[in-house]
Length: 353
Image 1: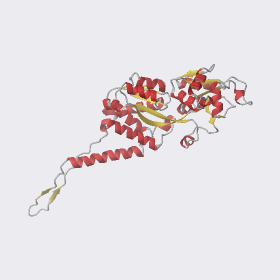
Image 2: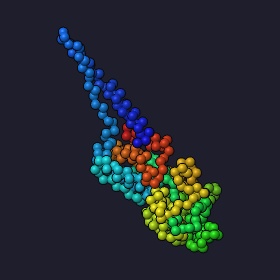
Image 3: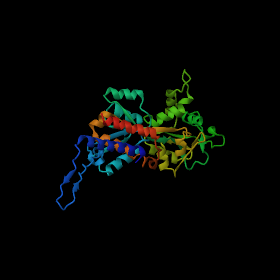
């Protein structure tokens, strides 16, 4: 348990103790008068038991189903938390669907079907407006940091790193063979693998890598043009399932792909993560912001959902308080302490309304 969470629990319990002390008349100390030959016997009052204010959010204290959907990148984190939540006594059903960030927000903000939306990017203004149109005020919880891994097969013996510009030219179609990237590379067709357009990973890649190669009338990155270039790339393979991308890349020395770091970590024997701008994706380079393709990870819910469905509030609380012990093992990196503090404050505010 993190220091933040321990401090939070200490404050809550301390407040409970103070309220108990103020709301209950102090027990009087009883003195039993002694006989002529006996010393006075002092009977100390018995302290009232302290009730745990968080007991109502324990996994075994809630019931009812929980539906989560969205990012394939956040999927391994939510899946792990769901398994642990059930191991701790929750007997309801938790659905964790990996359908991409965009599709997840559509299910959350348009259809209103899910309780929690997993996202590898922040919610867009248009998505937030769609949420509000159905009476949902999206509430953001930062849950970690991903270093987007650009990978090739372990069989690839010529590529160790790329610049952002080179990577963009590969994914926009300007480079179609490896010798166009570097004359010393084989004159073989570049086999491109990418998440699909419903993926937050795809959106982030367009924004950070491909879009900047195209300029609009104001001289700014034209993200629409970048997206059109990638989606129109001849021979490119797209999938919302990162495991499909893993299998495609590892099968050829001339393939290249990108996805969340957790999927690389899980398949590091068959894949090789390449350096971007001469920086490799590790915890140290993510934390010092030297790796250029690091990004935040989120889950979203609403205060009204958490109040109407205590099981959702309990799961999010469990999720936040168990991240420190699991996020690195899953293959991602902890969020900054200030962001984790903010997530817990958002949870507290939502559940106390």
